Amino acid sequence: MQSASRKTRVLFLCTGNSCRSQMAEGWARHLKGSLLEPYSAGIEVHGLNPNAVKVMAEAGVDISGHRSKHLDELQGMEFDYVVTVCDRANETCPFFPGRAKRIHKGFDDPPMLAREAKTEEEALGHYRRVRDEIRAFVESLPESLSKGS
Image 1 (spheres, helix red, strand yellow):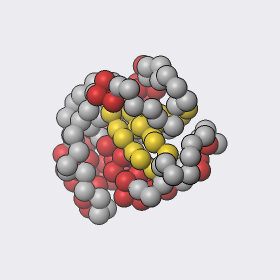
Image 2 (image 1 turned 180 degrees about the horizontal axis):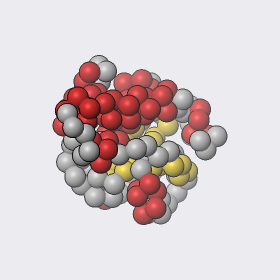
Image 3 (image 1 turned 90 degrees about the vertical axis):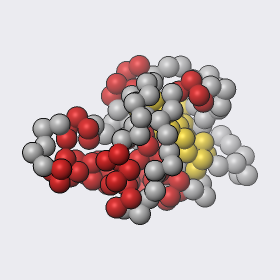
Image 4 (image 1 turned 30 degrees about the horizontal axis):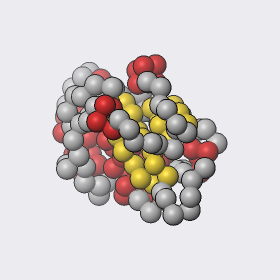
């Protein structure tokens, strides 16, 4: 699979690289930085979601320096795994040459859920729940990747 001297290179892919994939990259750097070399990108670019930044900061992870990236910016990089974190990215995920194994682990879309919220606190609750679900998934890495979960 890979040499022992190289970290497992993982790309977290979502539609706009604004929220879920950014959270996943942030958690992977924070929790698994010694094992993983994480990246995130989108099939579109929507900008970094300020509520994603806010709830990650609440959990002690600073993603404020991240920026929304289009998948094309990572062209030519080889990944061990491409993890789609939203259904749309999974449906429209391009072909990755090389050895990249594609895995889908869908998470709810906090901005969409927050549209119906009556208060900011209620809206942030959606972001916090998804943040915590993504953390639990990242905590299982890299072992769960080889199992395809």
